[in-house]
Length: 111
Image (cartoon, rainbow, N blue to C red; front, side):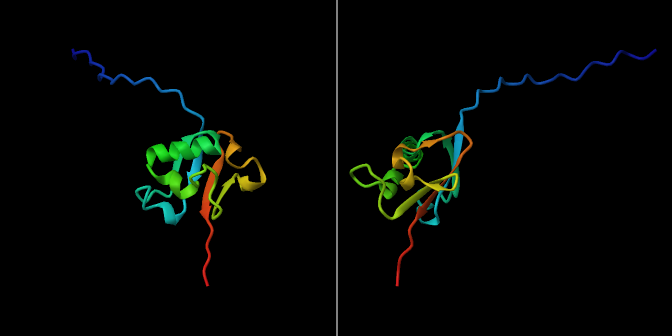
């Protein structure tokens, strides 16, 4: 007669945290020295101003590269949300829906 088999112990699973609606932000090469060479980051959705604040919290000083001392977007910085330039919408007050993709692009000039 054989001994009854003992089931393998299982590890308890951690409860899953509720997911926060997020936005994928693509960063230009010019800013990657400030972001630890990260080309993109996921942050909570909101308006563009709140997203820039969230980026600045993760990467201190990044806001200065995007916004002037007045708080407005610098003239050589362009931000696109789902392919639309925010300058033709509500600029920094443009709402960015969960699941959207935001591109930050620095203008290139030279001679």
